[in-house]
Length: 116
Image (cartoon, rainbow, N blue to C red; front, side, top):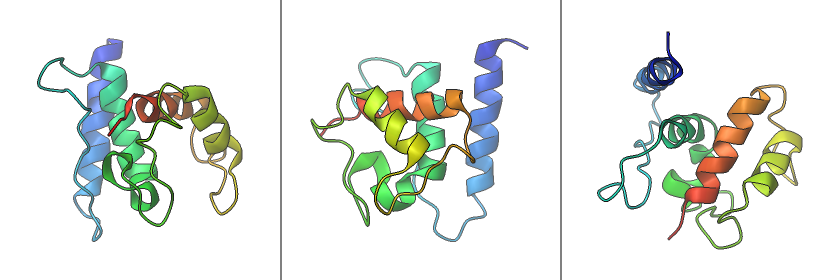
C-alpha cells in the first residue's frame, strides 16, 4: 500500500471514529485550501489535530480552554509545537505516551501552517 493510500485510510478511519463522539468537532480545513490543494501531511495533521487538540485549542487553532494556536507565535514553529506536545507544559499533558514521533511532528507541522 502506498504512503498516500495509507494516509488516506488513516485519515478516513480517524474521521469515522469521530462520528460517534457527543462533542464532535468539525474537520478543520487548511487556510487557502481553495487556491492550493492540501498535502497528505496537512490532511493527516488536520485529522490528528482534530482528534487530540481541537477539544482544548479550538477548531483551526482558534483557542478555547487552551491558547489559540493560529497566531504568529506558532506560525512556522513546528519544533516548538512538537516539543510542547511531546513533553507537555503547564496544564497541557505530555502526549509522548499517546502519539508516536511521526504523529507529533505531523501535528506540529499542521499547527505551524495555521494562520488567522
